[in-house]
Length: 219
Image (cartoon, rainbow, N blue to C red; front, side, top):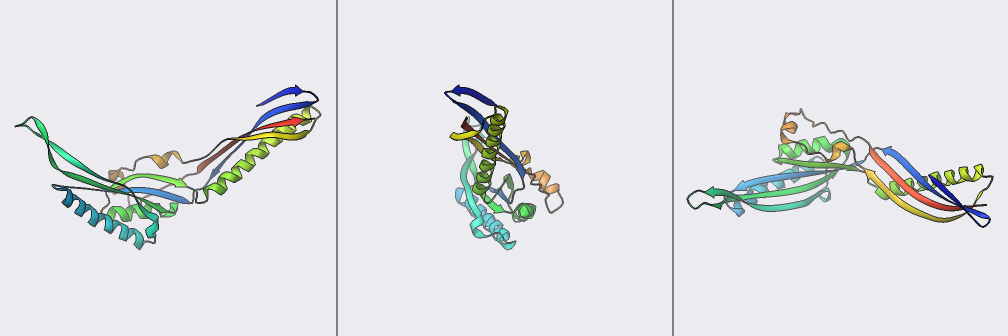
């Protein structure tokens, strides 16, 4: 859209510049969890630590570096049962959940999930695809959005037999890299268990959007 208003001998024009592109992701963040239960906190923690350590060792065995396996959440939750004789709830045990985020390449996502499940992990919470050099991708998109806005301004100037003589302001209105719809869904244990290894993971394409607003003068 464009809006023109005559100001003395110059014409001020406001234009929006947009850029959209679909790009292939080159990194994936996999959130995995290990849930254990026991009568005591210590027992639940011990079981969890043993499994979680084995999961990490197996992930490292396929080439995922230690620094790319990060704890994202650790919780201890009491489990209750209804004591009918007292008409209240009493603690029957404890549940420990250790969630980790694994950073790898999209083509290795299925293998990483299979390895983790085989090692004792029992939760696959979500996947998020992205670009390693996120800033460079966004900056390039902003530059394209500015060019788009200037092209619009030049088209308006040409139609009025004028030319763009000054750019008064440029405002970034938003830039985002959106994940494919499938990237945020929960991956059910049953479906993963039934899938023939390697677990098929399709990354899809990331949607890159950038918008800027320009105010220019024509003369």
